[in-house]
Amino acid sequence: LAKTTQPISMDSYEGQEVNITCSHNNIATNDYITWYQQFPSQGPRFIIQGYKTKVTNEVASLFIPADRKSSTLSLPRVSLSDTAVYYCLVGTGANNLFFGTGTRLTVIP
Amino acid sequence: SAVISQKPSRDICQRGTSLTIQCQVDSQVTMMFWYRQQPGQSLTLIATANQGSEATYESGFVIDKFPISRPNLTFSTLTVSNMSPEDSSIYLCSVEDQGAGENNEQFFGPGTRLTVL
Image (cartoon, rainbow over all chains, first blue to last red; front, side):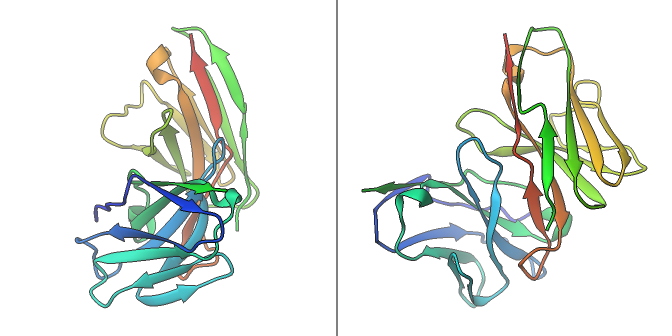
């Protein structure tokens, strides 16, 4: 199983772009990279998923370099409501179940 | 995408007792998962529950302490047995389903906050 490493915490001011990088040196060929967001007292929810290059949706962008050993979640112009813990998971199907420490993002007014 | 509900949402229990947590999904799913999240910590997978077979437990978790039922494709229960204060956690169930991404993703219930006195 691919182990992931993320910064424990980050602070950002409102309106700034936030980039959270996840390292996954042992990623396997069939693995996808999935990011989840968790607010206090709620279960995690899916943000974005990718296999390679760049993926963008209405919430975030995910940048994956060619070697796929890392990925970067980009949140454009964060607001106070983006304060949450962000988890990076790597795997396929039943192997995509193991959460790392996550990154606690605090958005400051 | 799947919608998941859990009961109870929270409970306060005495040590030595047991609590059964229910997880209901609005669609039929093959795999359901149970997690524990201790205060300020990440999620730890307890077990995988497939309908019609015994649950598969992760290292550090055993069936006698966390018996799981999976009677059909939309429902599962997790029992926390002979509770101690160390079992105080949030317990979450999740399912794997096709969502917005290319690969399957997990959908989580709101969690059950358990406090053991």
